[in-house]
Image 1 (cartoon, helix red, strand yellow):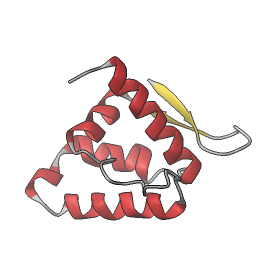
Image 2: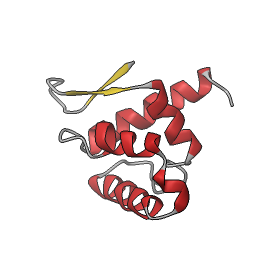
Image 3: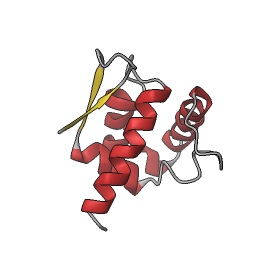
Image 4: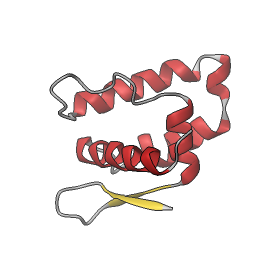
Length: 100
């Protein structure tokens, strides 16, 4: 289990499981998510949420792991742009340590 900081002051965090990270990898949720400037904004988070909503309407989107990721992480009440930025950093680090 991992924790990411969700706000600037560090008073809020979101727990991330190995299964959440694997789900992000399985559905390639971060592929082409961030613009070429590399800055994570609230619009990036909105784009991710819209992409996931689209996935949920497909047969592949009925996956329980994807629903768990939505409930526990993506739609978490504390998830903002900073949380997404930290989630992407955690995911990159996790992928480096866990090659496919």
